[in-house]
Length: 545
Image (cartoon, rainbow, N blue to C red; front, side):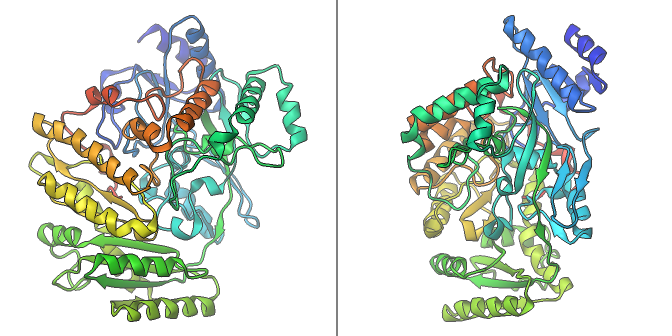
């Protein structure tokens, strides 16, 4: 065991391990990159995190930088949950619900809690967290906060950032802060602090004052966005300031979250689900736009394409037997309504039916739970692609999570098909039709030099396509290592420089998850590409996307 590991084990309550086997296990996450850590730490409490951060800060002041990477259950697909220094694994100990107010729905949790377990507890109180990702059964709340995660319900309810009321965060030097909106008067008190927290507030106050032009610059015109830092809702016109939006989606690059206070919504189990079949993508776009325009409209508007349905039919023909008739349509949409007022819900369903009938679209409507579960299998079938392999060919999460303006949905989908055709790859696409936020995973063999080269060609061409349509490189999975190289092109040099200054203010010595999100170049990540891809650490659950 190294001197660093010995020192930490002496000073923290949690466990520190350096075995080659453990380091190999934590060298990968759900993405295609590999970085071997120096040691693994399972913090027992916030004090362990604080002591570790203080220790790495002191080393960095003397010129020795040891990075810290916070990790949940390793489902991140962009390489944000791996690092070369200390990997802090939160689910082992910091996995509890600390407080739950059944009346207001406010819940306080530790970052390592399983999202699905929290959701089950909330359900017993008639509440839930709507922005749950597809991986919620085997991912953590901390990971969802790190990525500003979203999912099928984000169409109506928004992303994780909307539900984070406040955070406890360990800063790079080990100080602990509580975030939340501060009035102008409270801000003035923070500005006077002789601490690192005070330094941060003073630096941010000056940065925002001097760069009003950056805040007024155009952002991608999309319905949800996890790319970069949310610098726009930190400081408001009334002079108030809140650091919470910065930390949500920052992937541990600005601080390490040790507690989150979350707002929740009333849970309505009685929903109506519709399944519609399309043979024309442009009409599918028009229908999606009209459904979006409905007041108090769909809570979910999901899609799968013909290629995905055919893939399932070839590899697991009984999975969708008697659920989707053949020949398969070009697209299928699942349209859900969850209005709490039953009368209003039925009214919205009738409006949706009229839209579909106007375009002569075939559909079915279900209110029974068992029938709805059958229809949801259509969307859940994407899991079969994620978990499938053909010999050494594996489905790789390298070109996914792009989002474009909803009115560019048809152009986006057609562009993806052309990209796959150009590279002689089979396309299977699924995602969030209402947000024009799509997912796809091409089958490649990372053991082959040609496929490794093709990987980066696909990455480059795909994100160029997304940006050319006025989109964002990440709708709900954030940047990590994979999409970090495209942030400057996405936002422009001035906004990107603002992001860099934010990073520098919070992390002057570069100890907080370096190589993720900011200051990442393609040449930095190319050597990190795995030679073999697997999701072995997720097979206790069926991987989903």
